[in-house]
Amino acid sequence: GAQVTLLDPWGPGNARASSGGETRIIRATYGPLRVFTQLTARALTLWQEHEQRWGRTFYVRTGSLRIKSVDDERAEQAAMPLLKEAGLSLEYVALDEAARRYPQISFEGVKKVFFEPEAGFLLARDSCRAVVEQFVAAGGSYRQLSAVPGEAKSGRLGGITLSDGTTLTADHYVFACGAWLREIIPEVVGDLIRPTRQEVFYFGTPIGDNRFNDPQMPVWVDSAARVFYGIPGNRGRGFKVADDTRGPRFEPTTGDRMPTAEGLAAARALLV
Image (tube, rainbow, N blue to C red; front, side):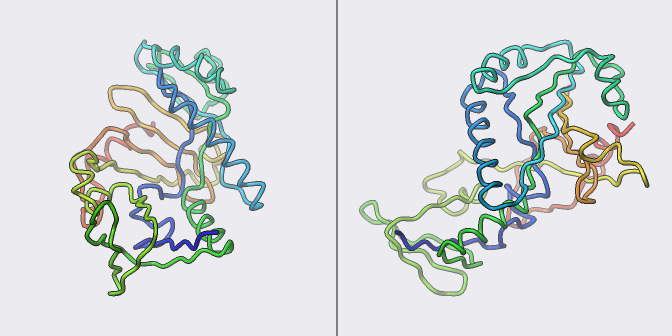
């Protein structure tokens, strides 16, 4: 029964968005962090419900391969009872069996392999666009504009100024701005949110070779000294590889997004 206006400065699924990109991994193995496992289990249910409601595919179940180059499985062992509690699972896979299942992957130097069968990847950009489409279809108002909060008095915000020069007032305001919250409401967020730079690369797969594409390839996490993860090629978008190591502080609006030679070399080193 509410009138709702949705604002986004660059549009749904844009290239700057922290929730954007072509694809994102969804998995529930987070060591002893029960709340993360529970949130993921709930999210998987909601993704499937929205797929049925909207008649579209957002979630691709490939399973997630956890490759351990160090002989330490404490995180996986801690996660197993939490996954079982949430109706999910994590399986130990012997190295010879892993090599049989995935001959396109080299397991040389690997100590342990685990497989989370319910995991996979989400079509992130398509999902963001679908949310806006359904929001508008349900009667919402969408405007591609940026916003600056006005002055707050007695616990109430006096409105927001939009980039077209107009002002918008409402009974309630929700700021779901991710890395930009620090810029928009610095007096509230302070230094609690610290955006950092992580580089993501897409590599072309060999001509006529589907071994590195969905569904032949699962999503994967390589837990070595630096944690890398990847997503199989899909919809002709290439084989995704990214370093999950927290990089230098980053300004999300004006920061330089050109890939570095060092980041590319580290990602290429995994492509044996």
